[in-house]
Image (cartoon, rainbow, N blue to C red; front, top):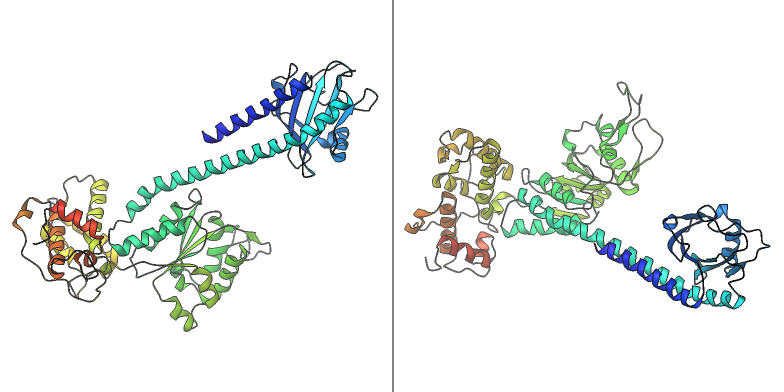
Length: 506
């Protein structure tokens, strides 16, 4: 709407200019044309008794009009005489008498051509030399107005595009981040980093243990970027064999090798203008890394068996669970490729460092199962939530999701009990508090009788908060306070305590 308003204002400004000119110079047709820089003039505004709808979007190609091209080259206003070899400016859309008056004046700004002003009258000798000089002077002001209107229009269009992108980001956030559930401070820092880097085109390197959600984060970066309308192409580098890896990434020409019966586009080419997600980049065969580096540096590559470079515009998001710096030191990964990929490194915390998120994620996965399978009655028992909360989840979010999926199948009566939380790995059973990996959880305090009316998830949350309060001596704020232990903001913790009916002195 704002861009349309600017265009309407532009039309009104040009109309006002030509009306003012008509008060000083009697014309029957006045036209302002804009030069497009490619030997073409296009009508921006036409006024006068002879103006009609045929002038809208009318164009003049200077290659076909050497008389007008000569006037523009001289950069001076010109009054055509009846004796000149001159074609009527608008001969193909307007029939004027042979002896009519025709004046043209280049619109210039600092010697640069921006357009042309034409004045016509059906009567002969209506424009004098004095009028010619006056119009030439006025044309300088018209040129300035035309440039300012074009700048205003460009700004309006840019603002409209930015507004659309902003609205997309705001609308997308709620959808994108709904798949990245969590409230812990460690996870909120990840979400902030995603918002920060998504709008750029720099490569992102996602690092973290297996199962921490690296592909989901990569997809979120893509959805929040300006490339969201284009493909997101994932590649699992650990599944690429050295013999086929180059063809998989860069494609091959017909006949490049035995079995290459047709041209095949590689993942790079398929991801043009979109995002290429290189999962487990640390497992990429060493012999293929130089070609990947070149493709990242130059934005081009050759297909296997090909000689013609293929140009692509691809945003790279890579992910790995291995220590790439260590791999570089051991000679298993190219140092120059590492620095090319790690422009924006982002560490995804393990689930044991997100203790405050375990129950949130468990309920999120269970809600998705209810929606998918049409099971409105499917809930956790308090004992199941207790077991979920106090397991260390070495397989991270992926393991939690799989355990909940399995438990939902076992819970034939719709209640997931502790015995349904199965196939947990042997080892420490207690999840570490955020920021205290490896330390046992705080000792339990007696449950408040008032929690009997809470839902199972709220019951477990209330119990977990009480444990954190007991371990911190009732403190909420500070590095050793309950909020820090839970990985929550103090204000968030206080709000949750109020909702759950927990007092500070419990």
